[in-house]
Image 1 (tube, one colour):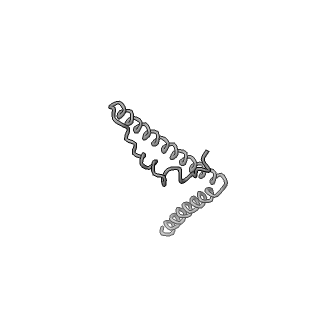
Image 2 (cartoon, rainbow, N blue to C red):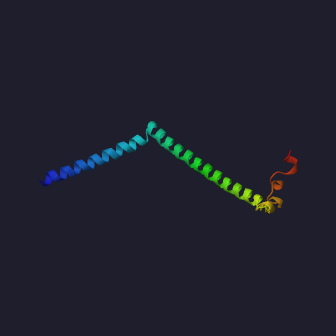
Image 3 (cartoon, rainbow, N blue to C red):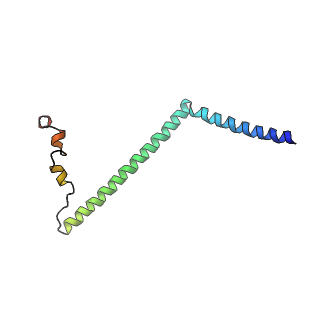
Length: 101
């Protein structure tokens, strides 16, 4: 009875090891590598779509804020005006005048 028990345990472990080895070997075949790249590319595209959607939502919210301020007769609060006026940050330093057209 004891030998039969250990034989069963050995068979179960052998099956698990063979299945894992087969799965690992499949991952390194050309088809397995292509499948992995396809899944990675799919997740990258989905992440990019999510990012673009978040940007669009943010733009729409900001545009709505600007329209509401305009409707109330308030002046537009330009948060970045001082940054654009700073010559160290503006494109004057990045693109010298001789390179601008």
